[in-house]
Length: 57
Image (cartoon, rainbow, N blue to C red):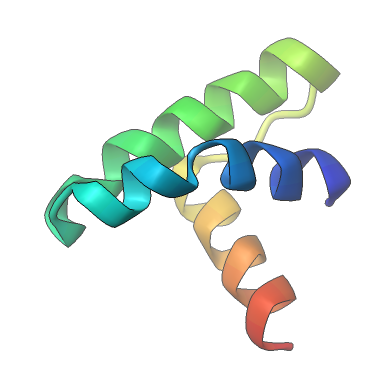
């Protein structure tokens, strides 16, 4: 979860300045980085769901 939080924070400006329908691309980048950095495989939608779960409880 810490790596996901770190990657999401690094991409915060990207989420702010692109339309919502382009967020999937950013989540795909985060998903790929999770795999490269930690060897952890998660789909972009899994990353998004986990982020919102962490954010909103």
